[in-house]
Length: 436
Image (cartoon, rainbow, N blue to C red; front, top):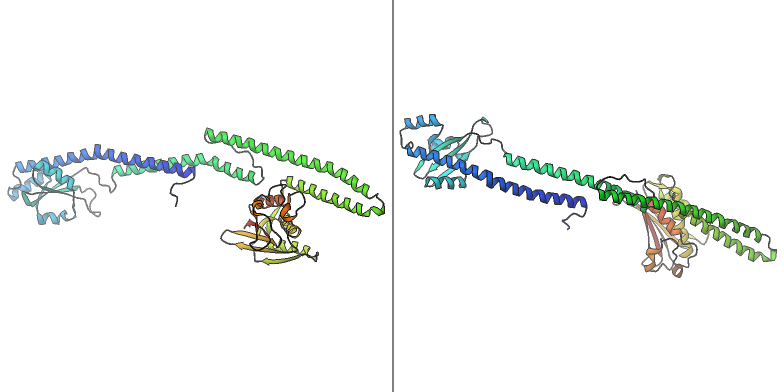
């Protein structure tokens, strides 16, 4: 299990949190040692001095009338054990450090406790300090402490909580502002990877982020210009090639009848060249998706396989399961299916299997086309989707090598993916998925 975050946002927040924790600990210790402890020692000294004054005047050994008069004058109660228990001693908390400091100053063992007002009592009732001396174990002194904080949370704790919350909030806002242009850059880079040209990104953030965004915009403009030049060049080449091909075809029509076999060969070659030119144009085009609409992939599969039934030598076995409607370009996906089926028949076998299913966990619609041919070498499978790549040695392929490249571009444009793999027993499986 990985504890450290991978993202810049998580790492920055973690760093700020650690620094804040160290700052809080240092602040708490500093306030404790340089503010709370001296104040506590001063209070304990005053308590010990008050008790010493009472011992010097021998108040604890005086009559009840003298004790009552002293209590009325000073507010310090001189109580027996039972009286102290009735007035709140039972709920008092003993503090060892206070007992030790007061005992050291009085030079005798002393028990110091503090009681707080009950929740339903008057909030103005003060805290009380209970003191018992070893020389007078049956007597408890009740000394009121006015001016102590009466809140349940000390001001120091509130201060540290406010500082911590503000620090975390400030760090979160800072990192969010820093990461916003990075997220925009990531989304634009994914669009470029799918063959799309996103609009220029706004240059914002730190100077380094601005420089990266500016470089990306320039790269994006260069790619757009390159795609435009490629489209224009491809269109020009196709135009220039089709003209002499047309003349050659017209010339073949003028051949004598005894040269029919020559005429048919030339016509077939011309048709193959026209098909290759069409593939070049299709690959150069960017708008391969077309209009998207809710569609049933199974319906498209049945429509294409029905058209294939006119060839008696070809047999397609369908293994289709119910699929949800998904957004897709019908013409583009038809082209994907037609290309995979055509490849399976041309380079695989006369019998193929088309399977479809829905993965509810991943929310994906899958389609697999399997043939029963000789398959493709494992070391060349990953390269089959590259333009102008053919597996001649394995499948006897002919053509421009752009069919699978166009197919992958269409599937990727639908935010899906396509793969090739050899079947464990025999044949090749072409599988693609589309998001539901």
